[in-house]
Image 1: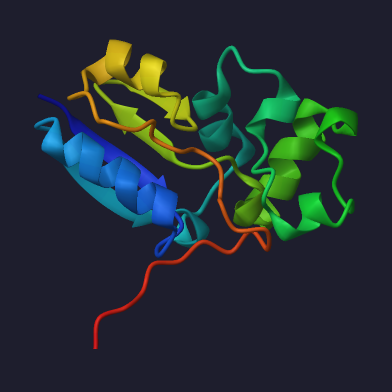
Image 2: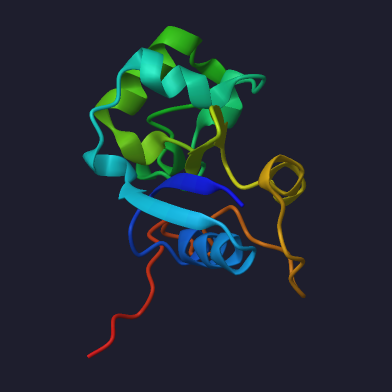
Length: 140
């Protein structure tokens, strides 16, 4: 099984579920806050190999939802620069394991990459809340 570095927004319901599926599949997950990383254009670019620039964006990010950032109109250099300044723009999760990196949680791609135990329902990638702020209830 793999050791997966999982860059997330802590409290995001979907990221929590995705980490659980990875753990239940036998993987060791090291979760890091995507907002707390010292991203550079070069370090971010590695996660987006083979994806169109518009697919690099988190569609639930406040600046995308407000129309301040239109992913289809942004070039590669501008996208990477904006994401370094505002990590909420980054499609989540970012994952890395065994020298490979990936953005988003495409279940079929993750299964082909590291293997997954099948779940009864699909694993969501986008935030189900209309305000784009995903959270899980805190105990206590």
